[in-house]
Image (cartoon, rainbow, N blue to C red; front, side):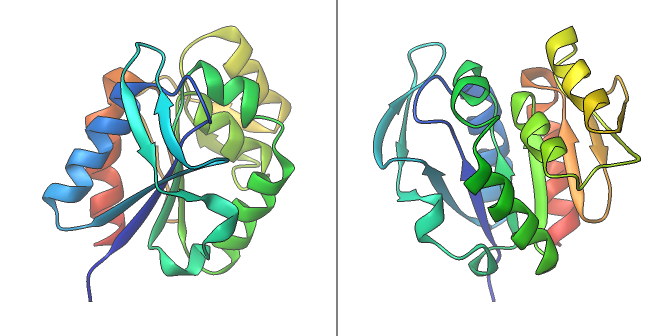
Length: 172
């Protein structure tokens, strides 16, 4: 049985490296990757790159995937940080033993679920994001990837490849 990953991007202004590098690592390992958002169709990244959101995340069951990851970018702050449907979706995925992951601003979305409370995590090293982790009782660690058995966070573009490799290792 092949493994599957759901990568959730904001409806605009996702970070291209944070999507493309982990996606490539997953696909090279034989993982089937689906890109989701809050809308379908072509989405423009922070640097004018394009991605195709194949599904709306609420239209697919998290249990169909081995990992659900929230990708960063400036649009993640605007569109996903306060998205309660996404927080519930991630908590439900975690309850079903699905790996939950976030990179850069996506790490903050994961922190807001409470899944990292009293644990270590990472995000892009700027105060606004580090403060969000602290506000959600997460100990910020300055490294590319912080991997628990059930939740993975990453700092951003510099750690994007390692983030993808960590997801591959964890879902085995």
